Length: 154
Image 1: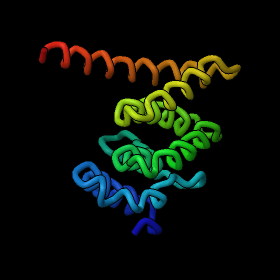
Image 2 (image 1 turned 30 degrees about the vertical axis):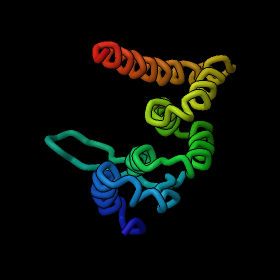
Image 3 (image 1 turned 90 degrees about the vertical axis):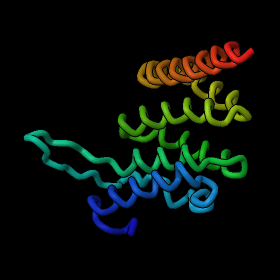
């Protein structure tokens, strides 16, 4: 199904994403199937006189974030690092935000994710720096919320 047209692929991926949210361990063994392809097409839909782009790449990243486990974290993280350096700014931004979410979801690997984002902030690429700051900010908001909930339970 994932080799079909972009329109079909998009809707199949949405269904898989819902399944991955509910049963991540069942989808996790197939994680490589969800690596976005650099030449993957987008498609347009017309809705109420608006043109909307549908990106299968982004759904695949969301699925990867749902199914990441200890045993596949390093490989998925390395794949994300490659996406950050691709030519698509949209994919770069979405990947940096995904890395911030991984830090929240996988506390065991949070330091690795945060160090990567901080290195981007300290780097020479101002675009990566600014988007990494956004990802770090979202991560810190998550940590703050987590701590507030923990403190209220004490």
